[in-house]
Length: 116
Length: 117
Image (cartoon, rainbow over all chains, first blue to last red; front, side, top):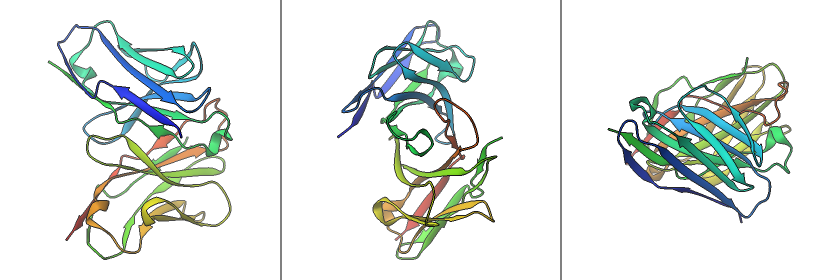
């Protein structure tokens, strides 16, 4: 079966420090991968998505970047964190082998990021 | 433009009673609809989806959802609520008429379900 792992689960970082959050998927090949941010336990904002290695699309211009160095690895980064980067970051995958419109996204358990 | 609305910020239900969490959508093409549940400090879990066919879709944990094309709604239902159903519920839609390489999911703002003993 397929599983998705995110780490760390929680992170406290000072303003201006760098960030690296990692997400890996097991049990599937060539997944579509997504990074979301959830503010205040409510709505989800899509940040980045990837349909293949090295292929990253950004939804919202911001202080963050994403990379996909391997097929099932998705990394969210920042060179200098801002206070506004605080939130709950969720990684998700969907099967590229399914008809795109009907494929559900499957989420990791998230990283809660607090900026001080 | 695609959009999805969850008109209730919170729904309160007594254990054993039926529950409904409302969702309406707006798309240009055929709608592809999903429900997710989120427990505290966890990711979203997929519950069910509507693609085509029968308007009543059955999903995980005894949940079902009814697709109504004329009312552009996709309400989540359960015949008998459990205290353990208390969580945050998200409706999401993909627009089948939108040409996107990854087919973006649009999420509602979420509805908090509280089931009281």
